[in-house]
Image (cartoon, rainbow, N blue to C red; front, side):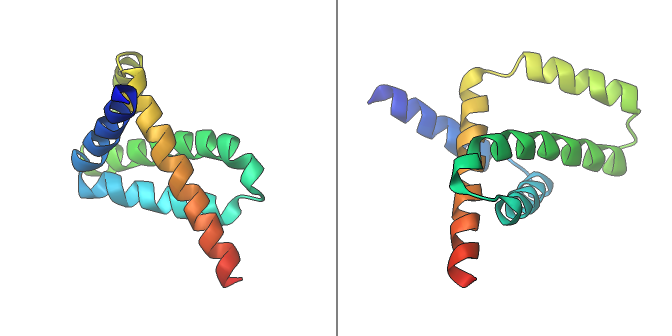
Length: 111
């Protein structure tokens, strides 16, 4: 049970520590991925691709709002990814996977 609590606290930390740009980018990527997903069986690859798209959107936001050089930004993101704890990566995967599935379910109910 303590492992589940650690995952829950990691999910809460990811959501609570995000700024509005990050949450907005995540919602846009999740909704697009949910609408484009063919079936529930493809939730894992769609989640991974949507996380990569989220990183690209975040990089675009960083370049648009702060005056970052693209080479410096890529290097910063690579170092941050190497230092990222796997629990936080798992939290992102769970958040995106569950919300993409919810969006797909709502889309199918409305359809």
